Amino acid sequence: MTEPSGPARRHLAEELLQAPTHASWARVAADDLDATLADHAHCEKKASASALALINDYPEDAELVTALARLAEEEIGHFRQVHERLCARGVALPRDKGDPYARALLKLVRPPNDERKLDRLLVCALIEARSCERFRLLRQELSRRGQDELADWLRRLEGSEAGHASLFVKLAEGRFGQAATERLAQLAALEAKLVSELPTQARVH
Image (cartoon, rainbow, N blue to C red; front, side):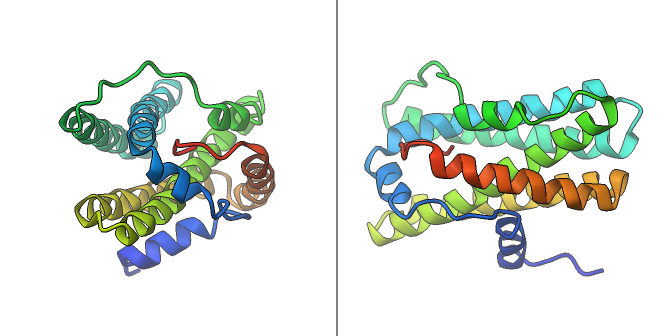
């Protein structure tokens, strides 16, 4: 089977989402780019930590361990990139104020072990898919403002997030089959409602 191209992969990731981000978000995020980048740095750091936590909890799952070890390494590399950009802009990384979006999604994870594993994989997929969508929106807004170098960098991150979303779905479907497809639809509907209720701020989520 041929691996999807970058644009196709991004499209597939965004298809996981049941509602788009509000049109005003990209303008708000671009207007306070330092805050958006700082939030993004914390998101990358936590994405790496989440992958390592899954490895810690399911060490017997060799495919998962191999895939998520690679993902964790990539995410911490992205964290370094964002931090370097903040430093170049003269901005110190602020303390992490928490992520209401991710916290709300994690509350949907069911406690029984199999359901917990499935839900954690799918929540990660939705977070990555939403990040992919928002990087696309921010990239387009920055391009309109003539910030082409930063937009090109976001395009690369956008592709990575799309690949990560697809990976989490593949891991979920490979372990839980049709149950993963059905649960993904349920979680995606709840994620869409959550996005519609959260305030529009200069942050990735």
